[in-house]
Length: 430
Ligand SMILES: *[C@@H]1O[C@H](CO)[C@@H](O)[C@H](O)[C@H]1NC(C)=O
Ligand SMILES: *[C@@H]1O[C@H](CO)[C@@H](O)[C@H](O)[C@H]1NC(C)=O
Ligand SMILES: *[C@@H]1O[C@H](CO)[C@@H](O)[C@H](O)[C@H]1NC(C)=O
Ligand SMILES: *[C@@H]1O[C@H](CO)[C@@H](O)[C@H](O)[C@H]1NC(C)=O
Ligand SMILES: *[C@@H]1O[C@H](CO)[C@@H](O)[C@H](O)[C@H]1NC(C)=O
Ligand SMILES: *[C@@H]1O[C@H](CO)[C@@H](O)[C@H](O)[C@H]1NC(C)=O
Ligand SMILES: *[C@@H]1O[C@H](CO)[C@@H](O)[C@H](O)[C@H]1NC(C)=O
Ligand SMILES: *[C@@H]1O[C@H](CO)[C@@H](O)[C@H](O)[C@H]1NC(C)=O
Ligand SMILES: *[C@@H]1O[C@H](CO)[C@@H](O)[C@H](O)[C@H]1NC(C)=O
Image (cartoon, rainbow, N blue to C red; front, side):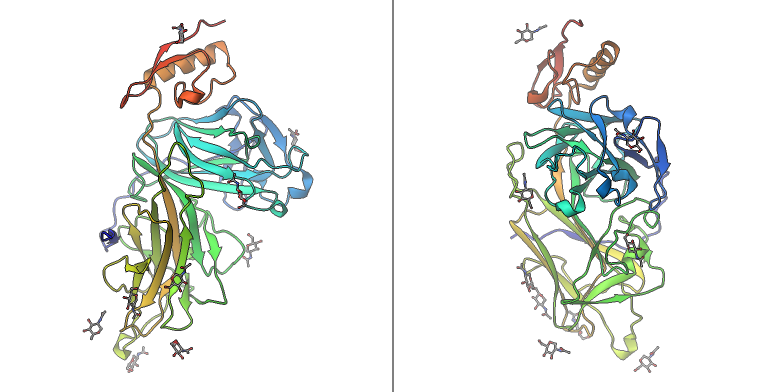
């Protein structure tokens, strides 16, 4: 097996921060013109009405109103195969975190959530949303997140009906990220979140979110008292100089350690090939990002040392023993996606270590290609102008020509390899 490429973040002079575009949050199905400030995140939510011209608004049923306000209403798309949101005024080439939230909450009174539907970002497949993953006791919820580089100043997020129930959506958030962040997200590939775990958080039930994290990531609590002990500090944890992840310090202030120095911390997952797809038959590649900070003041002259190896499937994933710095957040991460049928990370103390291995947080993403080409942008703009001027045809949503199976009714497109599809004719407008 080829050596895996891992990279340790070094201490470097702090980079110049770039100014960021504003976060941008839509509460889907909220009455047009309505807006509010979310209590937990202090972010403003606006109605999604200006971003799609399809679908119908619903309120969820009263018994589920205990959930966050974003989930109280939604937009459902009973008509058409593909329905899209168009997000404008983005910065072309900038990296964004994009998050869609779903809370069924028996909005249709049928007590039958859709089994699944697909999400596309632009013309690229994003994820199949499985509404049965979280049980009915939770009102059937799902949250999906991706980190992508937007190719354009306009981005479309589409819900695709795959015959397993009516697609709907409760919220859609867009968060600009620094360009240097998550270097694995590029123009060619996006990252879809599989897990983002906060080890041994103080509050074991809630997710940690803005304002502790300017990038508004969701951190899920992770702790198993039967396996691990927890350690924590009340002191501030700072990032390394050239911090590519800026994990909130509240996340880094807590960690798991093994109860016995000779035991391993381990975690793992199975590859998602349970969902083989015609448009992407190969196994997805994964990247893992492990976040470490020492939280105890060690006495080196007394021989105290915490040093460990990081292994993936019983091979060294990082070439040497690693010792985290006191109160400094650092990451060890895959620079390239790896492909295995199963992943088992284990972290074990080196022979010289007097303290058990530690882990503060971990993120796992799988890679989606973002290389499908949408319709030639001038052709697409022209078609959208015509659509806006003369009213909507039923499936005039999303990209005009791509994918072929969802091309706009009445348009004729030409497809040449390696070039964006072109519109060859537009039907006479009635
Ligand atoms: C949803 O509830 C709000 C507030 O009670 C109400 O103003 C709105 O008309 C309802 N919307 C629908 C689609 O029933
Ligand atoms: C959705 O998840 C449930 C529970 O994990 C699983 O049984 C079901 O097969 C999944 N459905 C789809 C369409 O993936
Ligand atoms: C923990 O999180 C839950 C859910 O967000 C919240 O209701 C509760 O108040 C929090 N507890 C503490 C001690 O912060
Ligand atoms: C730690 O594990 C080693 C090897 O399994 C065992 O010999 C030792 O007794 C354990 N120590 C404690 C404190 O449980
Ligand atoms: C560190 O260990 C040395 C040697 O045992 C001891 O003399 C010293 O007091 C310790 N320092 C602290 C801060 O505990
Ligand atoms: C993963 O590796 C650890 C340590 O090598 C082992 O204890 C654990 O059983 C493994 N888990 C799986 C699911 O293979
Ligand atoms: C830690 O794991 C590595 C790789 O699995 C193994 O070679 C090494 O012997 C282990 N170290 C100790 C001290 O157990
Ligand atoms: C362990 O300590 C010895 C003595 O200081 C040193 O020679 C050796 O390189 C150390 N091993 C590791 C894995 O750091
Ligand atoms: C579009 O293509 C169809 C099928 O190839 C053809 O019959 C039709 O004439 C074309 N329409 C125009 C306006 O070129």
